[in-house]
Image (cartoon, rainbow, N blue to C red; front, side, top):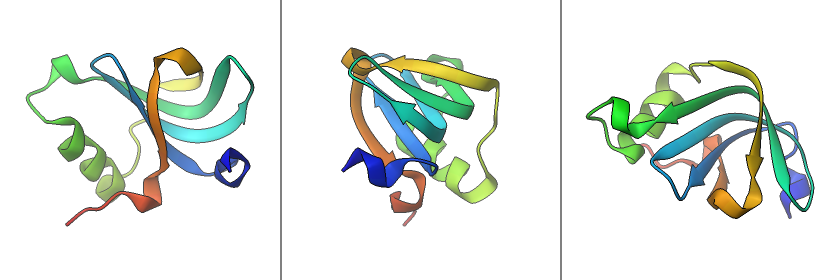
Length: 87
């Protein structure tokens, strides 16, 4: 199932107050590799997780990393950015 997400823009929700958006490049048993990533600390803003993601859908991903490895043990969920409900 994750193979369908390869090469596509994804939202990676983490246990911590961070969310990661970017293009899923590859994954293995330990990590997800995200390219052109926005690793966002939700403590830096008053915006909720849902509003931040919806804003990124509308205005584009605000890249602050060329590549990031996200530990699978820190991930709550992964979804396609295109599947985010913006209503």
